[in-house]
Length: 354
Image 1 (cartoon, rainbow, N blue to C red):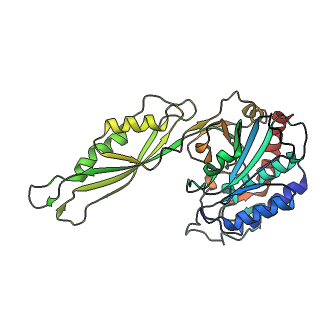
Image 2: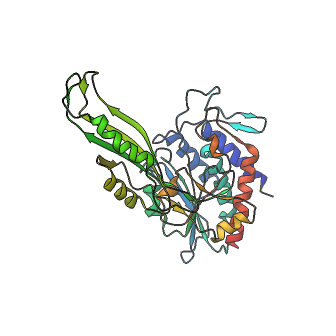
Image 3: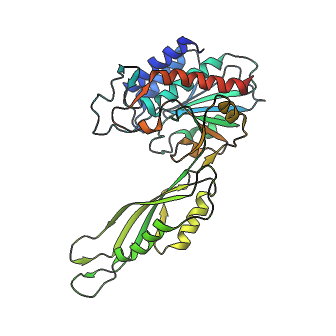
């Protein structure tokens, strides 16, 4: 059984976070709430930007360190909301509000877990918790900006809604801007070089190409053309066509290798917006995975990207809530899920820490 005070405090904290807008790069309000919460609970902490991190009271530099991380920024509410997205309403065992599921429930559950172990002595690992910003926009002012400050880390639990199942691998992300050059001319005459027609060949390649290596946990690399832009007038042959490709990279490749294969296969100019969002994984044999499996939690490979992509250590994505509710109108989390999240985190970590 979990400490009921920890649970109630976690729920009250989540309500305060929901009531405070915290869009990516605008997290000053939730940063202040979290700072006050740590202060009120007697936890010394560090800050950089809108990020906060803290270590267990009996930190020992000779021990390895576990990172607990989740984010306090949100996307903007979509137009389909029928409720006030900033009103933390309890209805039939659900807590409604923007960020309740993604990833507020995970965040407060991890904070409660951290507080449970905070004063305990003789732990086998140190624990550092990081509540971070700019996850939703993959910003550089979030977790990435404080990784050098955290010290040497052994492995991480990233709080994202997984129904407390164990995402032991996660796809990385490449967003590619592709440019095709043609030559303008009058559409009524046989002149010019149509950039759209030239682009079609490369677009067809992105649609049909299959990478040879397939990940056991994540399947194949997936490429999707998601945007295209060309032309200015109906009677002018376009001399330029740009299109965007969303590439989900598995642990069978690194981002640089995927980019090299693409560039060698198409004629267009390929410009990646970033190569920093890498695929990530943790071995099935890792003690934290085994601890989760002992609770009869399923393991799977996640197609979505989180702050895991910024880490160079084994990491497990796990948390209360359901990924299918993320970014949806009238977002909610079941209060029971928060309670079960705290209990699940505590139980898994006890198998590692003692």
